[in-house]
Amino acid sequence: MEVSRGKTTNNGTTLTWKVDHLTEWELTPKCFYTDNNDNQCCSNLIVTVYKPPEHVIMRLNEAGPLTEGTEYTLECSVQNVAPARNLIVAFYRGQTQLGHMKSTSTTKVPVSETFSLSYNTSKGDNGAHFWCEAKLELGAEGPKLPPVVKSNDIIVTVHYGPELKVPADPAPINIISGKTLQLNCSAEGNPDPLYNWTLPSNKGHHTEKTLTVESVDFQDGGRYVCTVSNKVSTVSVRFNVTVQENILLYIIAAVIVAVVLCFIGAAVFYTFYYKQNKMGKYRLKDAIRLGTVHHTTVPVSL
Image (cartoon, rainbow, N blue to C red; front, side, top):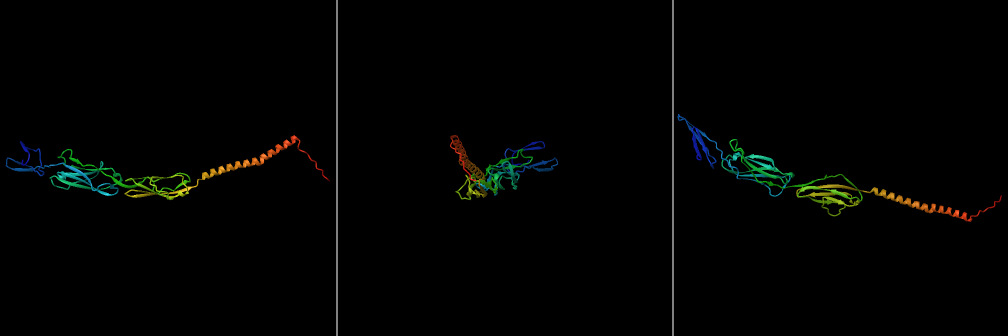
């Protein structure tokens, strides 16, 4: 056995080579055999000296919050690993693998490499964990469990524009005069959106999600525009409101007037007709009873 490190023991035709510590990355032991006829053969032993990564670091090429729909670059830096040709790096979002890649380096000595992956962010990535891992695939002759080193987690914040929870073009609204009008303009966004209402009557400045108008009248009819915005985008909702007369009130009022007129008519009838007629009968009866009624005979000339 021709080797610069370790110890060799001979047991008949078997040579055993043992080494406790090895830092020669390109070591190639040779085994020679000579038969009785001085014929010699030689065999090179394939030795792979590996070293798991000292550090695996996950980075993002953007500082601060990300923006929905924008492409960013995830970077996985693997430091001091050997042999790089057996290195596989995988990127993850939570427990979902986003992609993996293999080193193209052929050197046997420890190296440091950085791997990049392009990623397009979405609203669902807000608060997600991104990380990577470096694994040495050493084959059947290697460890049963391949050496794996995981990186740090990166928790991302994604800004996205307002998303309405109501239709952007709702159906026309008909409301009876005197009722309470409520218009809902709720939306979700990051950062939290701001609200601004434009009223047909230009009554004040309103910044609430739900606009409330107490006891509407005809001046409150028209178009209401709710503008929802944050630093990413702006959306709007338009409400068309028609204020109608309260027909029921008119009906109730007409019924009340009719009832009042009936009472007045009955009172007048009672006062000027029934009462006087009845009092006249009473006077006639009294006169007959007292003998104050005289019969007069009028002569007629033929």
